[in-house]
Length: 185
Image (cartoon, rainbow, N blue to C red; front, top):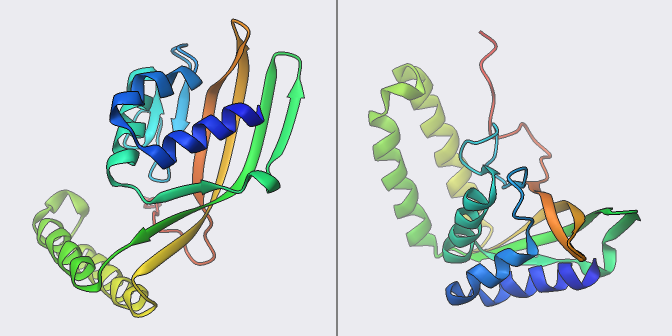
């Protein structure tokens, strides 16, 4: 299991698009394969990936645009029961976001947000703009290097004599109100 985790970590460090198909050998080809990224809320939507093709797309997108993902292997908890193993480990994602670039990216997002009537009433959109704007400015005041703590958990199965991921989740810790909220009706 540690060897699989190390190969997984190495793939995320190298980000070699030419090696993506080989990297995907770490995952079961079973249609029950499920990987939940930090943006996953509902099965099959956004970063809640069901099946090998969706997982491959998530990994590809991570390698192209996500930060430097690092598992804390020495703090990983690994358990094995027969043909099933599960693990949990703290991790970090580090990104460098230049202040001006971060502000411009958020301004671009705001233009789309202001026009998207599916996001609720004008007041709801304005509140989201205010919250996001203050958060962006607050975080950029803390520096341009962002290191976010992350929780990583996974289930592996012994698949034809090799341990492969069948379920995985990346999740950010939340110490304040979560970023996403479902309207209560």
